Image (cartoon, rainbow, N blue to C red; front, side):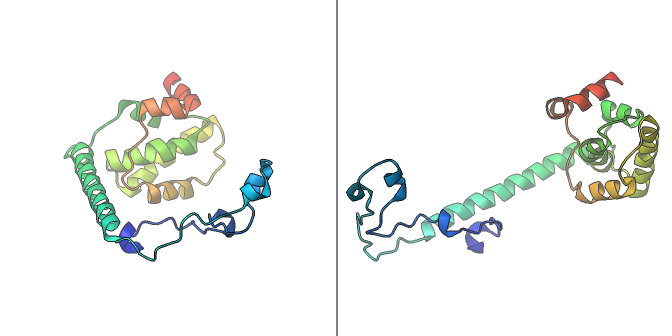
Length: 189
């Protein structure tokens, strides 16, 4: 199966007897009985016996495999577009995020780190790791004066840094939809 799915599979799929659609001929279908149908109507019958012939699987594998290859090509194209947009010679600046870095906030600091600041500093501004810790440490110290920070700042930054990959910061529109309170907090500052 790895060839068919090119290594993609649902590793959490562990079918149980309940999820199998197997009905034994001669038994009664409990769903029909629950609807009040008679035993004769509820009995599982064989409608057609298997002729013993297996259809060639090659038709499905070829189509599916070509789909996976086209998806891989799309990913490469997206990566090139991303590189062209954000990896050019001069790092970009996003004004509202720059203002956020200068503004201490009392709530939603972890969300800001995860969705906005770490992706921005790593993938847009291309800040070095040591400088990133200084910038975010200063911002979190200022936020601590607003309201006590109740999480391990170095661990949280390190965890976000490890998971940032090529993710970009959340857009202002998506921030407004997904985190309206945070959006209002940033907008008001």
